[in-house]
Length: 248
Image (cartoon, rainbow, N blue to C red; front, side, top):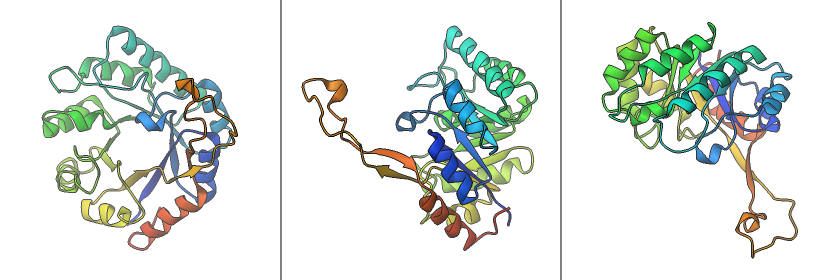
């Protein structure tokens, strides 16, 4: 089975690590600690220079996935900016307050992508009626769906992932993501029938800070390590996947 590998990164060093390890594409964002936010122009430019196929996450803030008019406009502008800068694809998503897909805004963002593939991100995992949501994504022309199967992680969501992948066939690429580990990546792909897989493969990097002002909350965690995508860790995931599946 040929599987497309996608690594989520929030730093140029992570993109370079993923490229050296041999992944097929990256999803670029910032602030992975809150699920990922839109990257800056400088970061996107620096990563695109590497020549690795790049999906840009467009999400203006953390929190719930119901967006107001100003946020919808910002997302449309960021989508247009990303694809014109050279992104291969964008990842967006929004829900209505009742737990259904915000179809009007999603259609607008697909138009803003100017023909580039659009991925609906894990906003989908908060949806009320997933099967109906899958039909909506297909009708609107979404290319790919990133989801944990509506659960905390892909292992818990595996029954739903398997069912959804069988339901959509070739009409929508369903890419498992969320809680993918080297220890479960092969099982998730084989059991679900997925054609692609999404993971981050990060390790903590020690802080260079020697002194921190504990009286100021902004600096109180300055000595805490940062998580970065690691080349050795990415290779460990790819090796585990190759043990069960032949990568593309």
